[in-house]
Amino acid sequence: MFASIFGRSLIAATILFAAMAPMHPAQAAALTVVPPGNRSKEQPEIPRASALRSKATNTTYDEKYETIVSLLRKDKKLLGKIEQAATAYDIAPIHIIGALVGEHTYNITVVDSLQTYYVKALAYADLAFSFRYKNVPVQTFVKRPEFASCASQDGSALIWSCRDAIWDEQFRGKTVEGTTYENITFQRAFFQPFYAGQTFGLGQISPLTALQVTDLVSKTSGLPTLSPDRPQAIYRDVIDPDRSLLYIAAIIRDSIDAYKAEGFDISGNPGITATLYNVGQPRKRAHDLALAVANRTGRTLPVENYYGWLINDRLSELNALLYGNGGE
Image 1 (cartoon, rainbow, N blue to C red):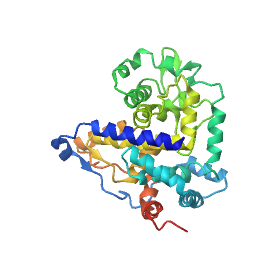
Image 2 (image 1 turned 60 degrees about the horizontal axis):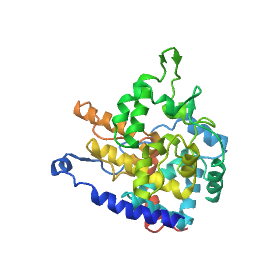
Image 3 (image 1 turned 30 degrees about the horizontal axis):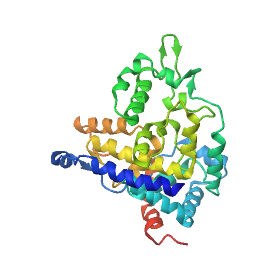
Image 4 (image 1 turned 135 degrees about the vertical axis):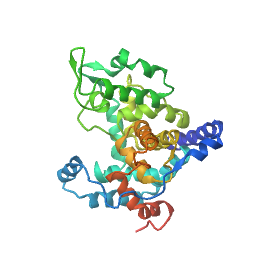
């Protein structure tokens, strides 16, 4: 199955990128290239929640880092799939490596076998559940007039990013028409039907993030477009290792494109793409940075967080997984 998915991915990607209009010379000149490496000399503070997760599993960050790196070093088939996904989405494979290493170092402990993920994907396919908050389905909630401006957006990334922003601006932590909305993210409010902190699969992808890149994945890899009306399909795609790699690549591609639209080329800094993979909302963050630069606040480049800092700090070792000298 995986070979056929990637066969379609590579063909579709070739057509997609060939059809894109070349960048105007003036636009190209305006791009600020974000240099490699970390802007911070010391690793930024690691959130307490991450420390508690490691303590609960009686592991250290170093142990978790070595576990995921060892898995990648030994599983040549997985590395091959990572390279195929990167080619399909026109990104360097180190970006996918960075996302995986960051997630499995700070957020979860890697499973012994990818087969576990295949089994979980099948299990979620049979569950009955929906995405709702205070018993209101997300499909109904986003029909409210506050979200009207999102309807004119082109594509799933812009539509769901718009809805995410409207939630933050007009509902989060506020009382609207007699209903009090908690001070939590759109993802946490609507897209965690089982438990808090809910992300899944090899790349620990949230349902909202999968919905944001579903158009890109569909166009590039030929997978069916996801919808909150079919939550089981979302969980299947983000848990299944073969499909999840396509979503990881798409998420990274989307972040690179979001920053490019605001005048920044982050494609040469895996620590920045890893940071964005961790924190999300690339359009908002890119726009905020562009405004800061325009207003001469002193901010000129994106800065990595603790998660991205690790990737840049260990870049030589992680690149060796792909380009040699990664054997034991």
